[in-house]
Image (tube, rainbow, N blue to C red):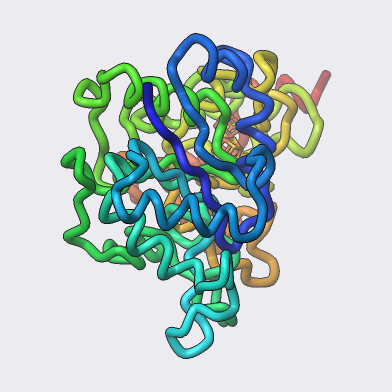
Length: 319
Ligand code: SF4
Ligand code: SF4
């Protein structure tokens, strides 16, 4: 059995919504079949007010064992390092997190806000938000670069805006069943089982990508990389392998991938004109090219294809 405490900082509850939609296993199955004991959760916990405070103090003092601390939302340090913009159970949330992370077996950050700050940490970042162990791409965050939980791992990051329910439940199950040692994490502490391939893997527009056929929102038969900013070729996620609601993904319904599982999200700091718009040099060469591609080689191929067209583009246009 694993005792789980789920807390929220600067959060929209999107990851909680995602978690509650889990199907294989469901949240009920997690509890009944996989030994997850939810000590408290903001939407499901029965305790209120001082009862929550008492529970947290019992965990910190060691009266109650904490196997997994799940954190959703940003860690708010403002104003001026006091954390008083986010008071919870009579104290700044940041102080609870500091003490709870010392007694937790494992700490799991869920969603972009908890992992690296996400949208709230975008400049000017009025709440002084940060992720638990990263701020954007920089390691450190609130708990610091050297933080290791009692179980021997740094914060396990499950990014996404929100994270896919399977990514959350499978990591919780791995910890609860003693198999977390089998899970590898990458340089940004993401489990490689979900974040080693690109979003593009399994995208139904992959052929159009190769043939450089432009697509658009909701339009079938084209790729969204060239004009509307799809980040599928440079984003690590399993969205087209482990489908959402078991049926689709953004790119499968012809919506560009926003790159939400990467620590740069939101990319270009939400600069005007950067959303749903491929950033170009010379009006047609993408500023960012697929991961692993040599820029010049890619530009050559892409430029030729865009300017002179490809056989399949000509075919599309004459249909
Ligand atoms: S739509 Fe996006 S993920 Fe799909 S092939 Fe094009 S660039 Fe790749
Ligand atoms: S398709 Fe892209 S933006 Fe959408 S959830 Fe997956 S990684 Fe995030």
